Length: 222
Image 1 (cartoon, one colour):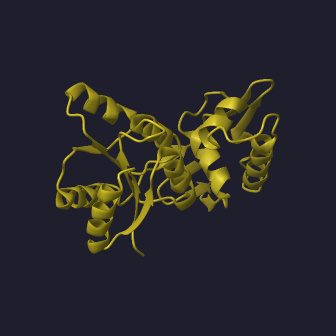
Image 2: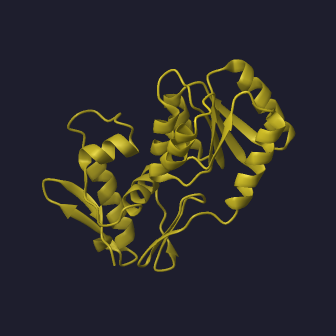
Image 3: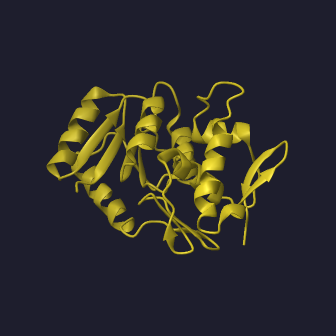
């Protein structure tokens, strides 16, 4: 199966050139002209790599990288017109794996894509006691058995698992997992938590999600 690259870029000329080069190299390319569309596409399609323009019309590229990194270990290559060292360091700290300064040669970008995908061949594994999450493969196991989660349940569990023990409020969860798109007084978070618990209960893992009354939820540490 073709590996999928998500290109988040608002310049149609750059999009056209990069997409052509990537497709010639054998990749399937998804494109988004702004940050909001890019985050939605990443959530729905689970790309193998993201190429992210820093100067988008709606959201800062570094902020998009941080949001992506909350629930995914997908490799991120940032395209930037800035060449300041401190800015590059900030991008890497935000979650970027690599960056290229504009103008750039598309052939070099394709080469860097190949390097990042090789590094990710085996993928990240989050292990917390009997719980094992593979963000890249979007697989979850408990006690060696697969937990069949919906896409949003998987995103939610992965979000909690990245900082086990930390209590997240419903508002934080809504903002990070649903991008703040839920209506006020929504019980969607609670419904998804209940569904996950039911699936984990069948594998003797009901208690790994902790409810903190009046605050929110946390993933128990072993």
